[in-house]
Image 1 (cartoon, rainbow, N blue to C red):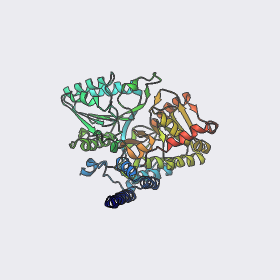
Image 2: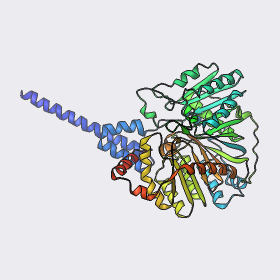
Image 3: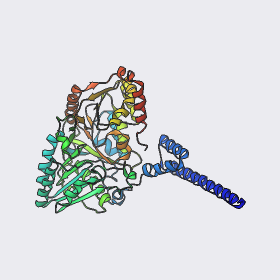
Image 4: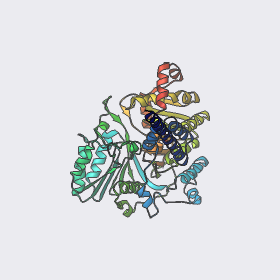
Length: 493
């Protein structure tokens, strides 16, 4: 009996010692990884605090949510100078943009240092509102393709509207065009199946790639690392870019519950080559197959017209993703806010930027810049509606105007500065787009395009409600607690 007590006690002590040892190893090991790989101090403190409070759960959460496993084979394997390798001298930059005001010349220099991609001149950029305008243009262009159709879409539903795209793909293949469709592994999931992938596979001559498809049940590591880009390139001569997904929701513009408002841009000109290059890299990463798009063989004119009140417009593509530690799009956004002298116009479906962007907007408003933010009153996720509200009061008290548009849900993404600089594409104003998703935005100098988009935003504002400071102050205590709690759910970077 005494032996059982003695050895039982020793065994218990041994198990306790082993348990403590495992906890220490998990806490210390995870903390070391955080310190070596996380640049943001708040994010690092949060993760380290979590793993020390709960070593097992904290470590598991960090493994699944905190580590970026994406290694961009396309960017690493690219041998020729292109989207990820082009470097231009400051002298060349100044020469191309010598007629810009001083603050913009400095901003252009800043932008080249953030991302060394050249502006190209001679581009036509036409905004198309909602699926009712954009889809017929897209489908017609695809049907007439003779060489190549390249499509990347985060969401690609199979429904009564997108079946028209499938028929267009068949026609393009019949014409002799190479058709490559890249869909996101999570964005296209419906009840754990990608129904569109099966339909695409049935079209002979069409190639379909899936970006980071989750392997059930190990899906969590890839929840945030999504390909959020939406681009279409046809024959290397016509492109569509923006934030519009492929779904019948985009044509239901009068349906207050299910409809989605959005904007896409029809593009012609040498900027298409930059769009194609990003697709090439994404395709290689997703499929392991290399190819060269037809845009490289097209001699699209690069017209150096630097009277910026006219189209054709100088533009450059800004791709970004979690494989890039600097957060290129967020830095460009931050720099543009700081460069603004007169007016900032923002339309975005999700407005959850981190404190650095919020402070920049406050400072712009306090120095006299007219700052206006247009967001949906209700998004497609209730918790996002709650999470955005805690930031309103500080912005409004600094002079920022916040307009909330009624249903249907407005998914448009537009950023204008001083009525001549335009930033359009797939990125929202939140941590997911700035740091956790793969995005493509386009930077454009064009007073004409800025005027068109400003008029579009003006129409949205006419239907919107201007948020007041008093509304924020009068919000009941329990709702303020709920809203601030949900704001904490903004993903760690």
